[in-house]
Amino acid sequence: MTYLAELTAKVRRCALVPLLLRLIIALALTGAIVATAVPAWDVPDAYLWIAVIAGGAGAVIPDAGGAAIASGAVVVAWAVGAPDGVGPAVVVTALCLLVVHVASALAAAMPVTAAAAEGALRRWLRPTGVLGGGTVAVAVAAGVLNRWSPPGSVVLVLLAVAVLSAGVWWATST
Amino acid sequence: VRAIAVAVVAVAIAVIGQRTDAAVLAVPFVGAAAWGAARRPRNAPSAETTVDSTTLFEGQWTPARIAVRPGDGGGEVGEMVTVVVQTTPWLATDPRSGAVAVATPGGRADVVVPVRAVRWGRNELCLERAVFSSALGAHRAEVVGHPIPLSTLPLSAMFDAVDVVPRPAGLVGLHRANRQGSGSEPAEVRPFRTGDRLRRINWKVSLRTGALHVTATWADRDTHVVLLLDTEVDLGVSDGVDGRASSLDITVRVAAAIGEHYLRTGDRVALVDLGRRVRGIGAGSGRRHLRRLLDALVLAEPSPQHPADNLRIRPIEAGAMIIALTPLVGSAGRAQVVSLVQHGHTVVIVDTMPPSAAPTGSSWERLAARVRVMERQADIDALNELGVPVVPWRGRGTLDEVLRHATRAAAAPRRR
Image: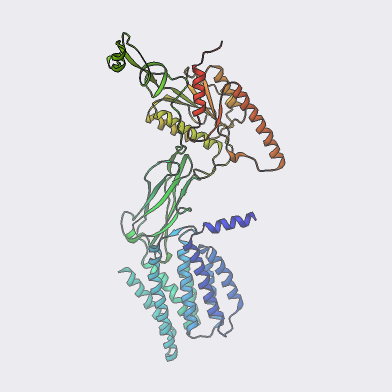
């Protein structure tokens, strides 16, 4: 009873924004895992379990590396279990991983009891939107290239990634 | 690090396994790493903490201002700063954690964390850390601050008393003396005597009677009040200015309130602490003396290692009114009071035992407490028999009845 009371008191001390960020991490990781597992292909369960456990730890303690391990596990699960090709599932997974990354970085920057100003959160929306848009654009380009199937299409996709990175660099440094 | 690690894994899988889906999964992480590298802060930031007022009263708020500035080179120091203000237990912050996250446009931000003094005493406020985060959390820098001492004065209790004191003395003041002289309160109309001032002549009575009469007044005098604090133990629970008060809380607040009242009326107030944590304050008057008194009171702490039995109180001026503030636990406070009464001083005891001191433990503890309550009542009865009134603290007017009684007793002829 005392432990429960202490736990309740700790939870009540938590501020709204850090709790929402943890909820967003959990939801986005769930989205990434579901988008990886639901399609019919055979994804090994071990990677998904690693992602679930590490993701749970990452949601509770965002700066402990749980989110990184979970993201890595999802990427490896795609590599070993899914067939090649770009579809809606991979776009959803990539966007979910982006949200996990940004929310983890933001949650790790403040204690769970911190009152966050709106302006601080708004400044993180722009890069997240740009990266999300870039991800969708790269996915569309990769899908088109896959259908066209020219020799060296992976190189072209990586080239697109490099162009995106250079573009981001240029956009943020000017 | 997270973005780079996942990006490397995904890109390696994409290249080695010729997987376009892995390349798409790498995009957010490559982009985040690139964005973070591009917006890398160039300067070490600084954070300076100040408070508007370092001396507060109980319940008073003051803003703690944290000025975040870029280093010498100027420019960005990060997208966001999270400041965490740490305080000692009797200071409260809004938010309660003292942690606030704000944006730093142009590398500058002024963060205000309101701080409230909850209980009297010496406190400290410190910028525990200011964490600067660059775009997407790629880089972090941390700055720590220096402690800022805050003093909370215990002036929250309200006190007022009738304008009678047992033995007024001195040359100036607001209390009516026992003898006639220069003052404002009329005493009688009597025939003119040599030495009477002409402006005191009562012309109406003089014309009616055909002989010069003057209006005599009672002299105005001040008095010497000694506050005797028993801080040997602290009984009960202290919740700060808004909650329950311990015996030490009551003692300190009452001492401050009584001291303020008598200093406001021009009297001289001295302070003696039986616990010896508070340094003794000699008799003095005026606003500066009140501040000296309050500054001394904030140091009060229970000090059971200094038995009050061994304390030798300096001789107190004859005719001084001694107000002892004690929870009447243990024999030390009582013994000192008895000693002072035997020296001919007028002593009034304000009982500072709080209601929250009642034990709620086992039946044995409750039984022991009942025995102690009976012993305490026997002590109070013994003090009453000695002519020392014991009154519980009730705020304004607590001392009115006992002061009237003590004044009557002081004016009565003495038996030898």
